[in-house]
Length: 367
Image (cartoon, rainbow, N blue to C red; front, side, top):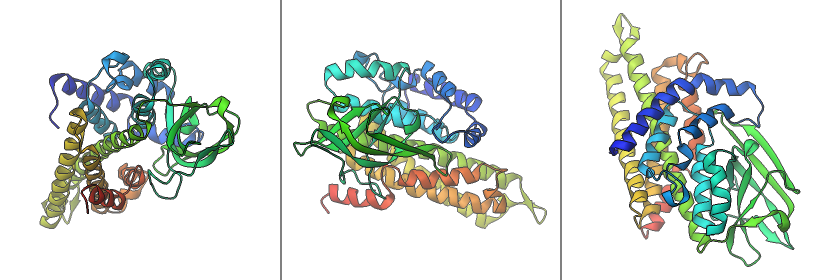
């Protein structure tokens, strides 16, 4: 990833911060807490002090406007440590949904508290067993919001929920309401990668408790937000994949079998070379997608699907190979490799699997 001087300095700062403040041991400590707690609030406060919520926010809204390439670099460093935080749920998904779909008045009213860390938000989009941005059954009917949402990230700790639903007019819209609103039932749980997600049951949420985002192009804003978030998630996965590969190569360089280093076996070298090639290919696609966001490229959706499909395949391959190359040690609690394996499987389904994005990529290209 080619970063400018400011982005490179930010990446170095964030990398050092995560190494000191958010090692994987901290993620493990969350397992003993409540299912509602998906991240450490103190860690998030320190991330806010670094200015991370405002990285891509335009300066006109008091953001840093460091660009998507800068945010992608931060996501990669977070992926290296498997950091649990509302970076994806609140900063990437919710904030950009507000920016893309909200009116100027709504942005001025709600964005400052998200940037300052006083509030966090999440997005309720998915409804079925598998990701589909178009399969939305939640709707506004008879003056109330009804439906069911699944895989809502960090829903147990958020201040606002942005819910994609069908309006009475038949168009898709974004409803914002508080988790405590009457008619909202939240079920939060810890996923197998020790992060947090949950479901939301909407049983007649009154329109008096709902604010509908009123931007000029809500439908287009929803899709743009999904593409932006998909690309940033792919960047995070690349950070995790590179960390796993580096740990595996280091292990093979140290571990001895039959009085020789495992890394000297040519068959294992070939497997590492294969993983490295796949990682470089996927990272190139992710970099192209981040650059497309920074340059407002007209084919951002195509770039997003290409990046996510390759990131899914790459992270799955490297995490699986890492477990095998570590032998039985790879899946023990003593080592972190198993957590990367679990994270790869969860990320594979978040915002679309490889098959979903390959099909979307083909359709967008006219096949």
